[in-house]
Amino acid sequence: MSATGNKRKLRDKAFYIKSAKQARRSAGELGPGIKGFLCTSNREKDSVREAYNLLNEHADILYPADKPEEAEDKKDLEIEDELSKEVETLKQKHAAPVSERRFQSVVTGVKGCIFIRSTVEDPSTLVDAIITDIEKKQQQTTKFLLRMLPIHATCKSVLADILKAAESIIDKMANFKSFSLLVKVRNHSLKRDEIIGPLADLVKLKFPDIKVDLDNPETSVVVEVLRGVCCLGIVNDYSGRAKYNLIEIAQKLAQKTE
Image 1 (cartoon, one colour):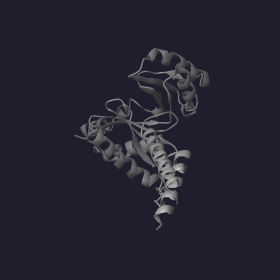
Image 2 (cartoon, one colour; image 1 turned 90 degrees about the horizontal axis):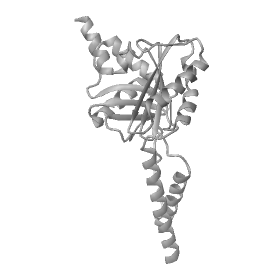
Image 3 (cartoon, one colour; image 1 turned 45 degrees about the horizontal axis):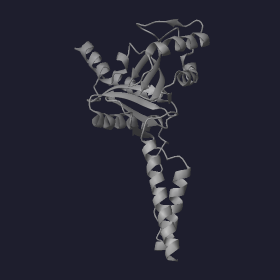
Image 4 (cartoon, helix red, strand yellow; image 1 turned 90 degrees about the vertical axis):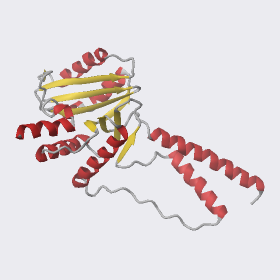
């Protein structure tokens, strides 16, 4: 191969390496169009580890067939063929979405908030299993991980997008008699009141007989604005389950048995 050809291949390789890195960086940040688990923490690195342990433990029980793909073994190639293969692989990675793990921590940009994106079908099922296990064993399972909320959709922190995303998940509120809205805005100019009114109207339009209950609602819409991204989910018995604080659930049950 000529020197010109080698230089071109090296330029191609550098370009696609840079593109792949940018794709991985984007996949490592919280963004619209994903689902998973929003957690609060008093030590983020340790909380991520605790979240992985809990989620994997219960996911292995609920989804035993869901196994991560194994990486292919690399073949022995000549130097020239190896370079061509690597460039082609990087092109494919650039064109296709970055492959997802079952659970993957992504950056939220908000202190004390971690997000675990997930490929599981329904995050609520997994959180329910975790809380039910804590209630059954009456034992604290985390030290740094505090609250864990199932998130069914994410979107841009724009009111129109938030209402559209909420409309796609509020069917989960069917057959409940009372509801509340759990709206928090962090590091963004959007105001809570701008969200609460239109969102309440949306719920009432869908379910005319459902009543607002701020103290002990049967079901609740979670709306967490984290900078430019909004996380939405549906939680049941929010007050009765210590606002989904895993540590408080265990501590309250332990106090009752003393």
